Image 1 (cartoon, rainbow, N blue to C red):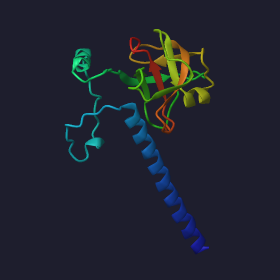
Image 2: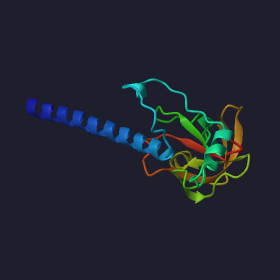
Image 3: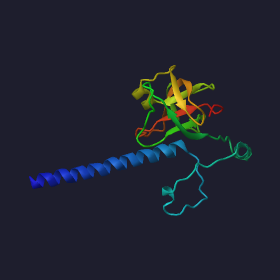
Length: 182
């Protein structure tokens, strides 16, 4: 019995390590595919990833200047923030501890988004939801979904369902808006 207890205990610990490593790898792949352009000239001190950081901000004028540089075929900016999606039951959709991402749509090749059902959000009252959240909540293309951003709750029509990169989101939720709406 003692040997069996030790075997089960070791198996559970090993399983936990595999599970947490899988989640970590999925989030790393998610965020690297969502952000293809990174600065390579900045050195970060060890442990910087533990300190809370605000997303970098870049004025539209700088994106235009980058686009005008010789050898640059195109340049795009993206708006990202957090949002709260309300489920069909009227309750906030909670994810696995990660915030709900609200991002502006980017044209290929800048985006890691892949629309798996219908299309991109085009108007001020349209949104694309991640495929897994829509399935869990019973939302379909054409449905109205309440979303809270920096503004009071608004109802957006679902224009499409989307995946972000090839990684599992680990239960995270996200909403994609057109650039002017974002």
